[in-house]
Length: 401
Image (cartoon, rainbow, N blue to C red; front, side, top):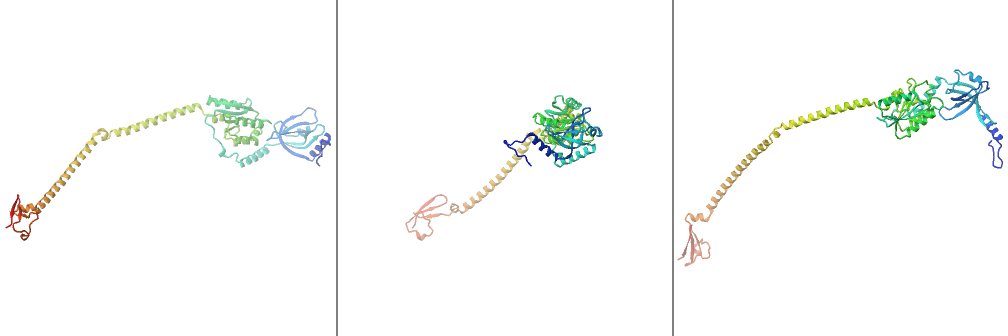
């Protein structure tokens, strides 16, 4: 039942402590998996004190164990080792602290570790964290290379020296962290997130110089894998372990086999680039010269054409055509004029033939009365009337008898 309290009726410390002890006692013995973060064993002491840390979260519990239980572990228990502990929770009412009393400790073997890693790998793969389409390409020449490595490690020296040998001007933002042990996951994850937040960092290299499967467990931590997957900056994994690749290799955008290989992947080789530039310059020069020669050939061929050698030849040819057309026009127009003249002559001859003057020319005369009317019948002209007789050349005046 819940403890009912109020400002007027508070519960005593001993009452609360006894209730907490009763609640915890209900838990019973449980199997716990974790990593030994600290082992404290004093000569002659009746208990050995362990700090058991969660492998994926920053949480730990205290464990007490009898020396004989600890001595039964094969191989001997050491800090950083993953173990299975069968223990019962105990609440010490006098001090108000919680600890677990271990009855059995089993070191986690390599087979169990690999099985757990495989299960974690399948889970993360199902979420798409290892998908090829989410991989980002590395920049050709990063402004700053972020480097996560062990303190004063050979891996750091290999990456920095080889990168500067390839490209002397490369800049580094280095985070030295624990790459093994209980603090490795926390420090590596924090370093990756910190470098991802630096605007000038264009690529992040997480490196370590190899090690056993147990040594590389931090780089298969689910929290670290998810942190790398969430990075906006491309990440290169250079753990240097060929046989059993940690999960970091699968989620990283690029995997390098060694720290030296990582240096080759993140920066170009200046000597190689200079050689490439020289080769491209030579190819470009050849291409330009070939283009100029080709265009010069086209120009020479154009200049060799008759129209450009003697531009007046076209004019002369057209002049001859114009002269021929003018002559044809004149001949055609002359024929038209001749035919028209003949037509006019013929028409003039017909008109003359039908003209009264032509009749007069043949000896005929036209007789008109005083009114100018042509006399066609002698009966119509009275006696004594004046008449005008028109002949071919002039006219005569007469009077009818």
